[in-house]
Length: 61
Image (cartoon, rainbow, N blue to C red; front, side, top):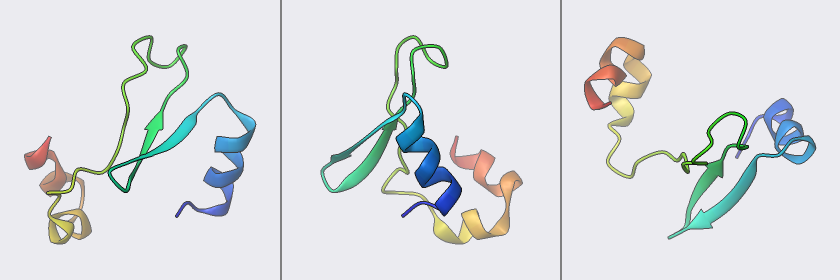
């Protein structure tokens, strides 16, 4: 699910959304990432860390 503004942005820009193994992947336009590397939430993210904030999330990057 996306917030309303992001949902509209996906449909009005060159971003592509696809499902891979049931997980949404977002492919940026070439002007953002020439390789168009898919972005998705890794299955092994620690959601408690996500709720704790950016400093904790950096541990997983």
